[in-house]
Amino acid sequence: MHVKRGLREKAEQLRALHRGNRPLVLANPWDCATARIFEKAGFAAIATTSAGIAFSHGYPDGQKIPPDRMLEAVARICEAVSVPVTADMEAGYGASPEGLQRTVNSVLEAGAVGLNLEDHVGEPRDPLVDLPLQLEKIRAMREAGERLGVPIVLNARTDPYLRGIGTKSEMFEETIRRGEAYRDAGADCVFVPGLTDRAVIGAIVRRL
Image (cartoon, rainbow, N blue to C red; front, side, top):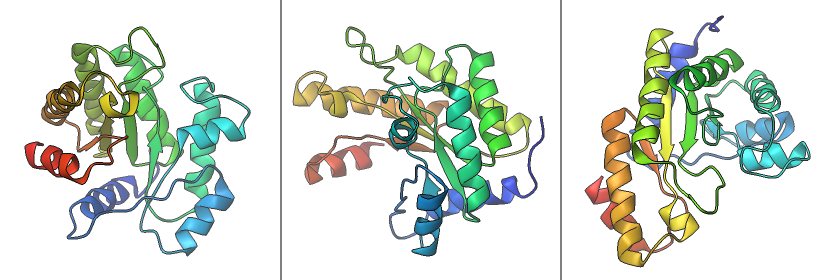
C-alpha cells in the first residue's frame, strides 16, 4: 500500500499532544467544511465522528455504513486540513487480525494517523466484545502500524458506562479490567464515554 509522506511525523505530533500539560480537546468533523472550520478555530488536531459521517450519508450509527464509504469520508477530511486527524473506525469493521490490519492500512492510506476502536458492536444480547478478541484486535492494529513505519495513535474505547452495563461498582471494575488490558495490549489511550461523575473520572484516571 501507499503511505503518504509525513504520516510518521503527524503521528508523533498527535501523540505529543496527548502528553501535554493541558487536556487535548478534539473537535469532531463529519465533512470537509466542518473539518476546515475546526482547524481555522485553532484546534491542534481533529477526530472524525463515525455517527456524524454515517448520518450525513443516510446510515444509522453502529457500523451500518459500508467501510469504504466511511474511509472515503475520512480521506476527504484528511485532504482538507493540515492538522493531524484521528479516525473513528467504530469496532474496526472486522474481527480477524487480517481484517483489522486491512483497516489500519486503509486508515493510513486515507491520511489519518490515529484510530478509535470501540468494544461495542451493537448487539443487545452481547453488548461488549469478548475481552480476548478485543485484545487480539488491538495487537493486530498496533502491529499493522509498526509494519508500515507509522506509530498510529490507538484510542481504545470501552462502553460499560455508556451502555449502563451492571451496577455502579460493576461498571467501574469492568472499565478498569478492560482499560488495563487494552493499555497493556498496546493502546495509547483508553476512552470511557458516558462518564459524568468527577470523582469516578478521577478514580479511573488514577487506576489506569
